[in-house]
Length: 288
Image 1 (cartoon, rainbow, N blue to C red):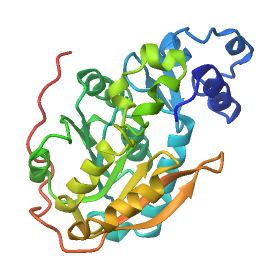
Image 2 (image 1 turned 120 degrees about the horizontal axis):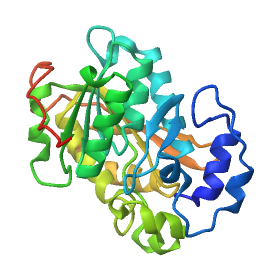
Image 3 (image 1 turned 60 degrees about the vertical axis):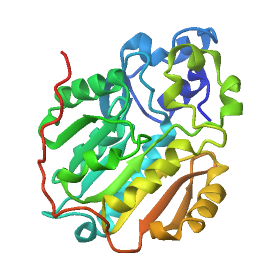
């Protein structure tokens, strides 16, 4: 569950993240933040993620330190089997719920031959990912698409780009009953739609899993950040959906030793995806 940003911000800085590369920062002032005060990332207007300085603006979800571990796991897997996940030396990656673009842009920066399709249903998130991609000069390798994957038939909008090697997401996964327990600054400033995963935190997760078989290449993978209660729930759900041909192959713990990340692999034939067709249709322009 997302934690208070006064605490999480201190931990992120202790782990070595600086607000700007090369600029050491004193963290003592963070202790004076009031619980209901705007998160420090929004006050500063930027934050470090995987060595990238990203613009931050409310109400777009602020990337947590745990999510850096998700990126690191994806990079490990790609390094171990580069030919299996993409053509021309790098994978075609779909990120569902791109927010500020932290995951997509981190992967692009460390996988120089990769390409990304990043989708989000929030206009503010789409705009912020565009801006961060331009700041980092990665805009030519990312397609940013306004899309709600919970809508029936949404997968069809992604087919023209061709089959994906990877699907990556830090989806809304907070159990609805836990939303009121979130820190006041989270409830006050961050988009609840980026947090609330429904009754069991599974609403968006199950839509991603149902979407993936139509989009993934043979033996393509899904990497998810989830609530520690979800590995068992997701495993049971996948067993109840054998037609999806998806297997939960690994669970990884975060730095607090909580089961936080899932690796799911497609084991059956691909359904409905044409040959690789990047760059595909041009995404809708976002007002500047």
